[in-house]
Length: 275
Image 1 (tube, helix red, strand yellow):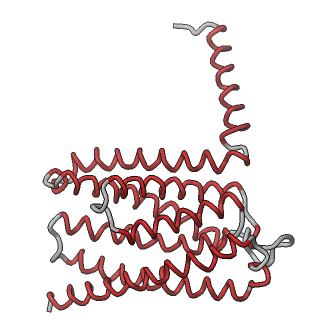
Image 2 (cartoon, rainbow, N blue to C red):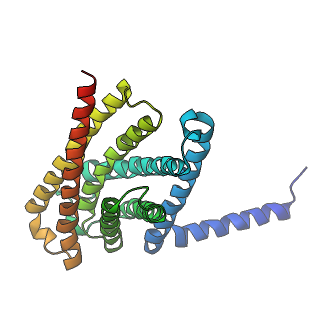
Image 3 (cartoon, helix red, strand yellow):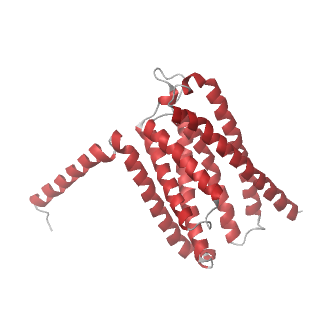
């Protein structure tokens, strides 16, 4: 059946209105922090529901879990997707993008940002808000006080960096540590699936050990060294940003070392059982 000219014009009118809405509001630079946070929250909801749907039909172990375990299973699916997204963004801005390069012709690197970096950080803020909400809702089933501290510090630092545009390079350096999240989640999944004695569980433990050592310990040391080399620029940041650059990574470093001790102990225990 032929479409009338009036219908075609109406469709084009709606398309033009949608384009104006997106251009002037959703991706307009002043609104990106807010739209990106909403995008992060929405993405968490979608991934959570998809994890639940897919797991129900394709993973036999899922249906045998308790209600709390199924909630955690879905939550870990959500955190895995966020980790992959923000790790890719962080690696790009730290190692490949020219945005924070010392060869950049103008401006201090501690005050550089663009709409893509702001959007990436906003999505991450949305994730931390969603995950914190679930942690408080089910406390302490999804994690104790250490998770509350970790997510709160991370969320505050990321949000400040996004809204102020300060210290984004160091924020992305710290966020690279999310590369360890998929492996941690996979370890939990293998445990729930009754595969704690499998080769996959052992290999996963070894990968966690090296990934944690590189991304959560050595990289933080490099970050502090970078701050030292560029201290003349760091000191020009607002007092809040300056404090966050030192306080948040330091607190996270202490927590990372504590968790690394547990990882090392667990790996030794797993290796001992297989001898």
